[in-house]
Amino acid sequence: MLIRDKLNSGELLFSFEFFPPKTQVGEENLWSVLKELVELRPSYVSVTYGAGGSTRNKTVDISHRIQSELKIDAMTHLTCVGSTRDELAEMVDSSMANGLHNVLALRGDPPKGQKIFAKAEGGFGYADELTAFLKNRYGDRVCLGGACYPEGHIEAPSLEKDLDFLKRKVDAGAEFLITQLFFDNRVYFDFVDRARGAGIHVPIIPGIMPVQNFEQIKRFTAMCGASIPSDLYAALEKRADSPERVQELGVVHATIQSLGLIQGGAPGIHFYTLNRSAATRDILGAIRVNGRI
Ligand SMILES: Cc1cc2nc3c(=O)[nH]c(=O)nc-3n(C[C@H](O)[C@H](O)[C@H](O)COP(=O)(O)OP(=O)(O)OC[C@H]3O[C@@H](n4cnc5c(N)ncnc54)[C@H](O)[C@@H]3O)c2cc1C
Image 1 (cartoon, rainbow, N blue to C red):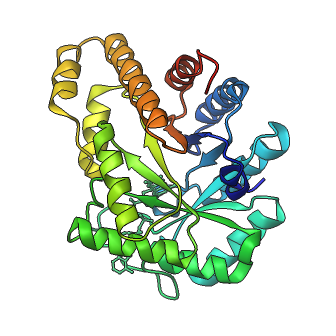
Image 2: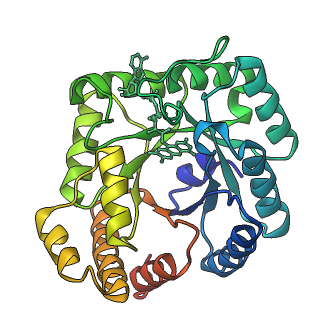
């Protein structure tokens, strides 16, 4: 089923993001986590596209297996990194032939060792170009999503410019947006207000990453330009020598965040699972406890 139709039905969308593992052990872990998490009846799951285009075939293989074996709708991520438009078309043709009609169309990050994104010869330089290309090629048979950055994309010259470019992506065919991780709901609600003011009216789904490891979250936020509020940072720092207590705080914080987002009108939550089940299971279990979500 297309994500567009799920959004139009008014259903709150809870989605789980996974990455394709590089090892056999990682693969086995992924399937056991997936089997556990599909019991929570996610609206769909999404499978990332390896940085630099690595693991690209796995994205489609895993997504196809999720749909055919676990009977859960899947969304494939796709980036412009290192591919010509013909190669991208070939990949999406094959996904579509396998029943994968939901695509998160991304530019991707510059490959390791490069600071500036250089488009492949015959490829695309920005996500809006990929989005327009896919929309033109497949029309309404494909449902396209895009990424957005409540605190601004790390390369953007200003928040205003970032929003102008985001509007282009939506005008090109992105039907919904998923945010980069953030830890303060005001960041999300302010961003949604600014986006609406800029003429962006598609659903903006908040992306939540429960903190599972202090060092890792410091690394991730530094890489993507998201901030950790000082009180959360201090509380995590105090627990830094106890991984269990960091994870407990991560779950509690993400649960409060998720409830606040839903109560404030967010169309759902996209969980960055990092291929682990416990945090997502606990958060979703907690916010569904009163039966109204
Ligand atoms: C929900 C989510 C999922 C992700 N999944 C993956 C994944 O699976 N694999 C992966 O490798 N990465 C993934 N990423 C990371 C993403 O690839 C990077 O953040 C990347 O740097 C930007 O991709 P984008 O699609 O947002 O780019 P764009 O929308 O193209 O934006 C990139 C930068 O260019 C600017 N810009 C945009 N359009 C124009 C234009 N027309 N002219 C000039 N400047 C412009 C923007 O302001 C921004 O600074 C994901 C990010 C999110 C939020």
